[in-house]
Length: 234
Image 1: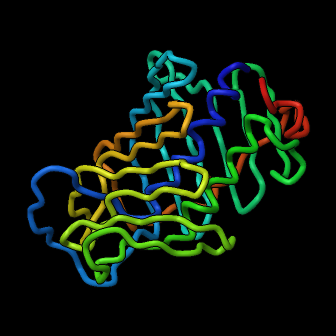
Image 2: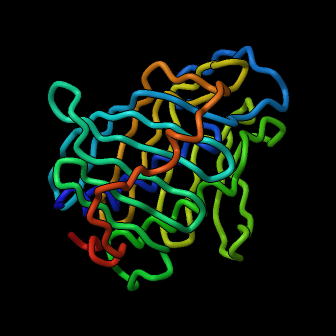
């Protein structure tokens, strides 16, 4: 159950891939198809979580389908599934298979300041859409869909390097690669002003392949289903 509180930090980041990434070292040209974006993603991921001055690493698998659906499995030794997370719109479901337990509900039901409430950052992330290859290099200020100011920085190829919210949350993108004609980051990192953060490495991502409905839907038969508030802060 303690993993759910850790999840509140990194689960938001798992959809940061929806906005294309960045390069901080040498910047080779990428063979990409203009206008082509991420519609689906399936990838093993390695996640490093830093919080309270300590770090831990987990491995898992992420499946995403535009506009806002995903299924993430956190894996333990020998590939055992420790935790599954499903999201669609404002609804979040966390499933712990070993306990036949799940928590599900709307983010609006959570109290301000709770651990899972940080999931709302996802909205800020996914609204960006595909990589803006036509953006000029340098920093650009703008108001996002929520009316909050943010700063976006692009490299000389027009690829997003960094995104900073008015609250100081920071996203960086590294290691662009061309996958199925799409510019896609191999690494995404998030940090807040407290120094907490998450680093995600995508391992052999597959883009824009068919995703079955069944893998995006939590299977809750025989599961003890609790309100999402029952898991907040655990």
